[in-house]
Amino acid sequence: MGSSGIQIVCVVLALLGLIAAIVTCVVPSWKVSSFTGQNIITAQSEQKGLWMECVVQSTGQQQCKSFDSLLILGSEIQASRAMTIICCMLTTLALLALFVGADFTICLENEDAKPKVCLVTGVAFLLAGLLLLIPVSWTANNVVKDFSNPLVSPKWELGPCIFIGWAGAVLLLLAGGLLCCFSRPHSGGSGGTAQYFSNSASAPSKNYV
Image 1 (cartoon, rainbow, N blue to C red):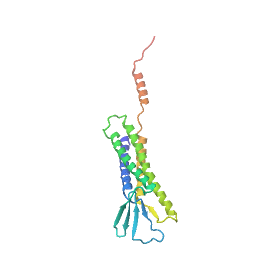
Image 2: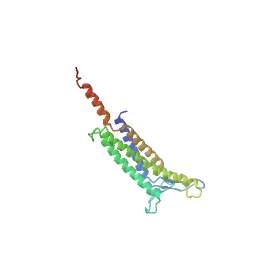
Image 3: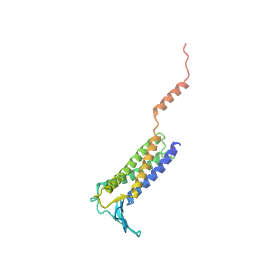
Image 4: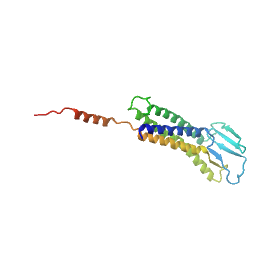
């Protein structure tokens, strides 16, 4: 597969990763209430996200409420907000840069600059993947740790957004890794050496007596 095919695959992977990052950031399903122990039958379940918490009734009715103040939130939610937002913004900018520097577009006429743009885009995708992987893994670790602690109540379980965030982070890391591997800038040294030997071979030879 040529470089154009690799770049098209990276665009698809990055778009899917961006969609997953947006869903992870917006949907309030990072943590869901657990029904273990004596809570076998319940009339409602709770869900928490980065921006609001929701209560879902057994009839399907859902009521959501935004967090009252940023100052009362823990460091986990504040850091997760910042990292997921930066991830979405960085992925969007990297996708625009990839469209400019890709081989299947004519936005950039300088062919020597295209591999450099794609390489920078690959690094941006790697950073975006890490920015999405850190908050979801941090939250998952805290949920599992609190679930195993008998002194912590109520119990929470991993929500769908945690798994969507993991999937999006893997897609972004894969797109960045492919771009970094297949978008290396052309070195000018080998071209100059080849040109020198070509000129030497084409030059007429002189016979000395």
